Length: 230
View 1 (tube, one colour):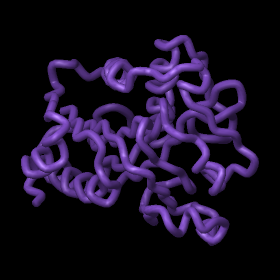
View 2 (cartoon, helix red, strand yellow):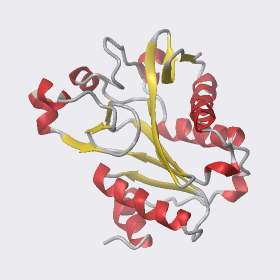
View 3 (cartoon, helix red, strand yellow):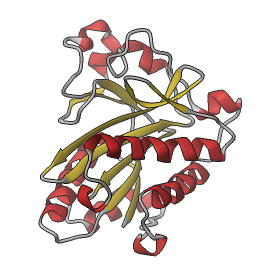
View 4 (cartoon, one colour):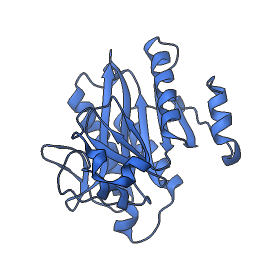
């Protein structure tokens, strides 16, 4: 099932993740892929370098969350594709590390669709282009069910990454699809390619996905009301 609620505040989206996780854990719903965007937000995973928020006033003034995913600090903002797969992992792989490689493969294939040749980096999770990081991955798996996921920089502002140590990698440079292409890309087109590649890598028939397309003026309220949120 594919859910696309649009631009959603991170805390609200995290609540949705938890709700859908519980539903999936109790076999009350099928596997879900959430494709979403967030307003400017910093998130700090369980392995974040301590006291990063003291580096800059900008971090203390922005929305920020300590979250229970793996990995370090990252930034989310409009123009960035964020994906949260909530699925029973054993249906796709028995290995946590292979799951990360599968997510990376989805991203690599999506970038390739737009003429961007990407690669993995030894000893680091995520996807890189010419030595610059373009995608971050941080997940959590509880009782065989996945949470959290990945981000892919498309048209988003990259300067907020300068205020943290992204993914605990000192000196890392961050890039985006638009920076590489020299022009803004269609978010919808990238999302569609991403979903197609996710379907291919995870061997899920597209007919198994159910699309929730909600008009922009009703996206947040209408979508969340459908899942029991006020």
